[in-house]
Each structure stands twice: as C-alpha cells, then as structure tokens.
Image 1 (cartoon, rainbow over the protein chains, first blue to last red):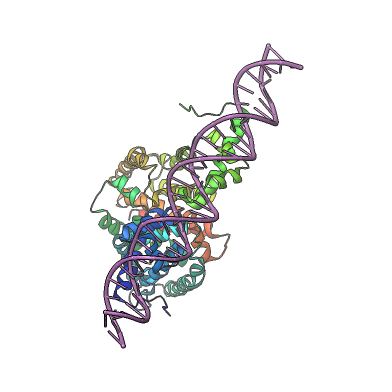
Image 2 (cartoon, each protein chain N blue to C red):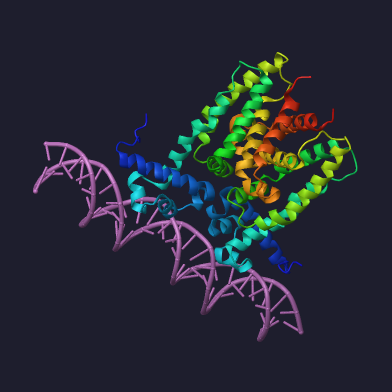
Length: 204
Length: 204
DNA sequence: CGTCTTCCTGACCAATTGGTCAAACCTTTT
DNA sequence: AAAAGGTTTGACCAATTGGTCAGGAAGACG
C-alpha cells in the first residue's frame, strides 16, 4: 500500500524533516505561495536533496494532505451510537476544538486547500468524506427520531461544528487580533461551544 | 479622501473591470497564487495597461480589501440597542449568511488573506475591527445583565457567527461536495442557524 | 484640422522558481 | 580495501512573473 515507506534510517529522518518543514511552510503560505527553497531551508536540506526524496513539490503537498486525513477524520469516526447523544456530540465538538488547539497548522493546510477550490482533495471530499458524513447523518437522524436529540439538520450541524472549531485555528490571527493574545481563548471557546450546542441539541 | 477616485469615464470603467477581475482571480487563488496576466486577461486588458491604472499587483489587492471593508462590516454596525436582543442577533446571523450567499468571492478574499496571516489587514483587525467588536460586546453584555439574553461570551458568540456563516462561502467546495449541488443549502443553513442561535440565546 | 492629454501595447528585463544532472561523497557490504 | 549502492550538492536550465519603457493610437478640445 505504502510504496513510499522509508527504508533506511536516513530516509525516515529526512522524509519526516521534509514533511514537517512542508507543513510549516504550506500552512502559512498555501501551495502556490510556498517555494521549494523555503521548505528545503526549513528542513535543513538543499533543494536538490528535497527532490531526491520527493519527485516534485506537488508530491510533497499530496503526501502531507493524505497523511493527515486519518488524524483529521478520527474524531468524527469516533461518534458512535452507544452513549448519550447530546454528550457524544458535545464530545465531538470538544475533540475538534482540541485539534484546532494542538494542530493549527494541519487545520490551516486544509483550509488553504479548500478555500482555493480543493484541487487536490476534491475526490476525497466527494468520496470517503461524504460517505462518512452521510453515515453519521443517519445515526443522528435516528437519535432525533427516538426523541433523544432536538430536531436539527444533521449535515448543517456537522458543518457548523467544523466551522466553529476550525475557526480558532484557521482565523487565529483574527481571533488574537480582537481578543489580544489571551491564553484563555481556547478554554473560553470550549465553554461557549458547550453552551451553544447543548442548548440547541437537548430535546425539550 | 479618495485621491484614487476615477476621473474620466474610461478610468471608471477600467478600474472597475480590473477590480472585478482581481476579485475573481484573487478569491480563487489567493494573492501569491494569482498572476497579473490572469487578472489582465479576465479584465480584457493587457498587463501593461493594468499597471497603468494600478502601480502594482499589491496595490490592486489592497484596493480590493479596503474597498470591501464597509460592505463587510455593515451588518455588525447595524446591531443596535433598540429592538429585541434575540431577534436582533438572529437578524445579524441571517444578514451574514445572506452575504455569504451573495458575495462568496469577497468572503473568500478575506479568508485567503486571514488564513495566511493577514499581512495586509492586520492593522485593520487590531484597530477598527477590534473597536467595533468590543463596542458590540458591551452592548451584548448589557442585554445579558438585563436578563434579555442568555449569558454567553459576546466575543465568542460573534466569532461563532462569523465562522458558521462564512463557512458556506469559504468552504463551499466542501459543502457542495458533501451535500451535492443542492440549491436549498442556504435555506437549510438559515433554518439550522436560526434554531442554533435561538436556542442558545433565548433566556430561560 | 492640429495639438494636447490620456490611453494602450509590443518588446524587453531582472528575479524567482520548479526541476535536472553529472559528479562527488558517504556507508555498507563483501 | 574495493566494489556497490545510497546520499548530497553546485551548476545549470527553461518557464514564469512582476514590472518598465518608448512610442503609437485614440479622444478631448480649441
């Protein structure tokens, strides 16, 4: 499956350094705004050496994006039928917010990609991601039918959760510009989002 | 005030065509991902002719961003003390959603800018925008103190409204990839967001 | 019609950038 | 130690790109 798996120690170390550097650079400047020289310099390698490990700039970008997908979709996969519906979804909100806090670069990498039309991940969105979301939408509709969740559109619920949580990573400059460099911003956001979704989802 | 105001008919027409084309191109590819040739071609002009009206690529970008700010902040300015608090905020949500529907390119232009660190609008964020938001936060806190609104953090409320509404413009590719090219997506979103914020804001 | 100003363009330039390549440099193996 | 295979780089290339410039075309105006 992974024909690109590193064999030697040196390969493992360098490909990891390249991907780390590329994440740093791509997430700040987007694909077209980034240069191989920046990535090479950040990784502590020469440009031709980058291209010894990856055939092209685009290959690095694709490797980054696809390598990140599991991490990104994990929390949604974890939404299961067992347990209280409201608490399950609130848990999903919190784990997405946690990811925005811990992996802002990854979030911005995807944001950059999608804002610009998702040229390299459209297939994934329309395929596996859509399937996963549709599957969870069915689960949510079941909860609603059972009266365990207030009636809401499952798709738009999921969209709003993505939007509100990733906002703190993708638009961090704006958030900090308005709030000041408050250390508490993620904790305050957690409390607000808990209230927001608890109110909207608790059946009356 | 506006030393750049077009004088002749031709100037008016061409600067408008350039800004329109630049909006189209910048909002799809970001600043660094766009080229003067693309903008020129889209505007139906030659590249040197672009640079006859604007001194540089960056000048076009800045002109676009600053020219859009009033449009962008209008709805928030319209949040006033008179009227019912819950309905006022719900109205703000709907007008922001309406803007995402009508002006998705403008929204993506800002999204691109901010995701990449807002190099050209950080001053506006930390200055006028912060002031406006802080002012409305005071208003909201007043409503809460009067028991006319459920107690929520005003700043995070505003962030979440921005996030949920602009999501439908900025991440439209994702939304459509999952929903299919549904014509109703904005109407469904309007209903969902109305429920979401009505639940969270109505005092109990 | 003639002049003055505005508008427009082909040709050009320097810098940047993704990518190539032959040669050198390590390591590991035999 | 020598062959063998993996690793690294300086030099180089072609394409792209933001921007310049001299001069020509087109209005505006007397």
